[in-house]
Image 1 (tube, rainbow, N blue to C red):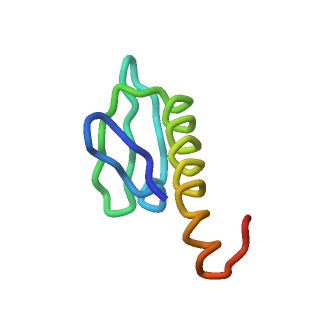
Image 2: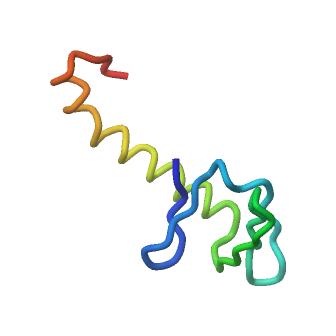
Image 3: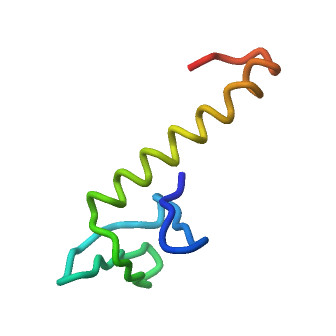
Length: 72
């Protein structure tokens, strides 16, 4: 799954190993050693991730039903 960031940018949740709040920014430490900086607070990133996940599940539901899959 992904966390939407500023603009059209997003980051895979599997790439993030730590989030550290520094002043008015949050630094995302990635598995490959890179860092990304965002103006979002960690709590806001969590909310954005949860909203994105919920929307993705809802959008996938009709396809799952057509394919005979679970409604969960």
